[in-house]
Amino acid sequence: MVNIYDGLAILENPKLTEPIEIAPLNSIKNTQGIGVVEAPRGTLIHHYQVNKKLELEDVKLLVATEINIPTINEILTRESKRYYDEVQDLEQVKLHAQMILRSFDPCISCATH
Picture 1 (cartoon, rainbow, N blue to C red):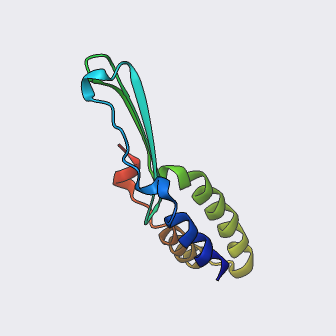
Picture 2: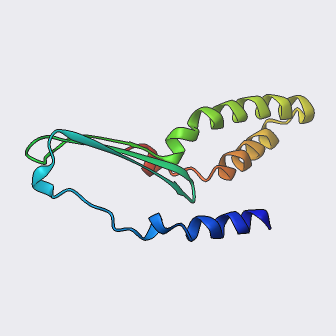
């Protein structure tokens, strides 16, 4: 209940309805922007850098699968060893590893940009 009350208080903040000033494009000089958003597979991080001609100089994208790869590797390694010690059956370990991997819902196309 407290969270609902706090949420309503935030929404009633008059600053939320004030107009936002956006700089005209021709006033942009060497600059950069970063965006972070939560998506179904996890966090997406975008970093863009433009020059004085408003041309993209650099773009870096960090997608959820790329961010999760170290964790996926660690869990797959640890759990495969643990499960093999338990069942002593490599085929069962392979099936178990596939279930673990699918739980992360990796998007290989997204991670290889």
